[in-house]
Length: 79
Image (cartoon, rainbow, N blue to C red; front, top):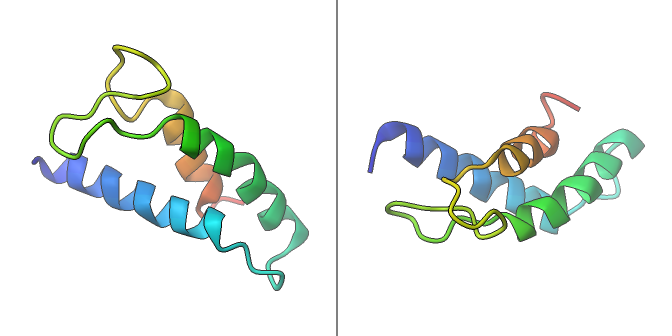
C-alpha cells in the first residue's frame, strides 16, 4: 500500500468517525457540514483497502471527487 493511499484511507476513517459521532457542542456550521458529508461518505466507500475502487462510481478509482470532497467537508479545519 502506498503512503498516499494509506493517508487517504486514514482521512476517510477519521471523516466517517466524525460523521457518525456528531457532538452537539459543535457549531451549527460544523454539524451542517457533517450532515452533508455523512451520506456522501456512505455512498462512496472504498471497495477494499489494497486497490480500492469507488463503490458509488462503478469502475472509478477511489477516492472519487465526491469522497474526497466529503472528507474535506468533515474536516473541522475547513468548515
